[in-house]
Length: 65
Image (tube, rainbow, N blue to C red; front, top):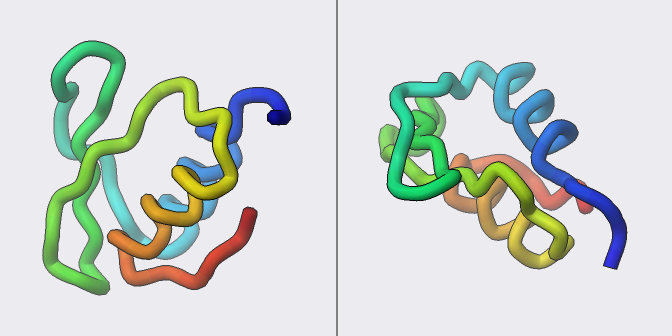
């Protein structure tokens, strides 16, 4: 397991036009993807590549991690 993947993940989401909407439960944030038209949670401390790629998939973006 590497370090925290969330900063890189958020950068990718922002570059793709996704946006932060509001705080979620615990240390999650709710983001919106214009590609899929859905909202999805982003944890503030993602350590797993699989989890990070799953978030990208929900956003309608290709795997990166």
